[in-house]
Length: 437
Image (cartoon, rainbow, N blue to C red; front, side, top):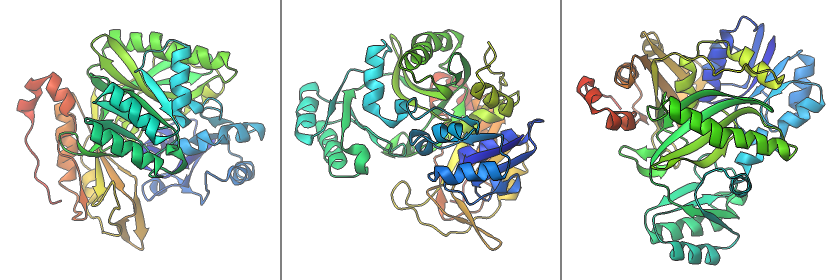
């Protein structure tokens, strides 16, 4: 099969590595790709926002399947346009992608289909939103309605913080995405990411992971696109996974089909595991970043075959086969992120780090200037270790980071802390790593 993968981040590099292992694969093209994907696939200078150009490329290059990485083209309807042109594409339709494209749509959908989530209200002006927040009290959660690159959520621990977030959104901090907002109750519990593959009729369990959103250690500082993740999430035992599939994933699939928008692709449920069970925080309609970098190294079957089965409505009636091992991925970001990252600093030692056993390196925001590898974005690299448990995976990831020489970068040193909070015995096995950052 000839496959076109759309995207340029660490998620897409991880997907490309998994796709390249498939015996079904003949040619893999990544558009636009990055220096990491360039080593295993052909690059194409395509803009995923230009749907007709993508369709023309697919027809000219006999592409059998398009895999869409980021959310923006999905929300914009690229799968519909490719399907209309006779091209198979993995991902939801524009109508189904509203689950991620609009927080208001998602919350109303949950209320209609009795999917457990936080109580909420929606607003189109700051004054009404502030009045509601004052009536509710802090802590409280403020969300931009539309896509905001994973940064449009403020968990406000005080009313002052809530009102500042409301003012920021209505003053254009997130553009059109923040012109309507959701204000919802704060949920107390353990946050987790849960993924299921869907073919419109059937959903099968894929994997769980836990992300670290805040830029600073100890969950301090502003939200980011994610500073690291590990998989599986210890809180997601067999009983909890079954409950999530039954009370959240299954009614989502049934409800979308009833609306005439059957969901195909990967359903990413952001959850809070509360004392009384799982609650949905938000939907995403694609693989997560950086969760994918931690999940796919555990995959023990053909990713390409699974994605094709989703498109062709023939997913197996069983969960996806994953290793019982743990993978932990650490994001290396350019100084200044998540504000204005400092670009152009040179990175050395990637090859050394990637050659270590049970370690993989995925590129996210890197660029080539001649022979030099430089930082070209905010989140720049992912370093992933695989081990028998979180402690071993973490040790391998941070040991590999020690091999990378990049004074222009930084990373969090506490990735995996939630797992250690649940199992303190593992802390005895950790040797704090040194760093040149």
